[in-house]
Image (cartoon, rainbow over all chains, first blue to last red):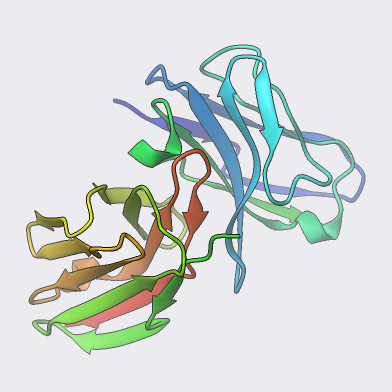
Length: 113
Length: 108
């Protein structure tokens, strides 16, 4: 089944403890992206990658890191999480460009206390 | 900055009613997409429209892209409880901009 897999689905952590949210797609998509979704603010792009070793900042990149060493994986790293990073996170992928539409993962609900 | 405004923000209707959701911008988009998101899940792509004036149908859902490619509408005929969810429009080619969303509740 063609899909984007995120792990974990739920995570509660403490301020300052480094964490990684994994994202993997099995569709050979070139383009991958991370979003956060907050009430009243909608979906906001954190980082995106147009291909292996090519990443760029989205609208809200502060406090996040990403890497794209392989085509299928695009992990999101929070080096020192803070409570304002409590959110619902989505990984998404697209064949070449977002103009063709995204396939989204099921989401990761992160709580930082 | 390209912005997409959706209306209405919330819609609560009874099963069997028809409804229309609007997505408007002052910018021209090369393509526009509609997604539906259920609570706790990721958005699911419903349709992509790329040509001004284009109309696409997906069962009881009809999507239209404005002639000037600045707006779009989603019309649902005879809504069912399974249509409940958050409807998002999104536009752009290299970078996708998401609309503010319309939360639809269809009661039996």
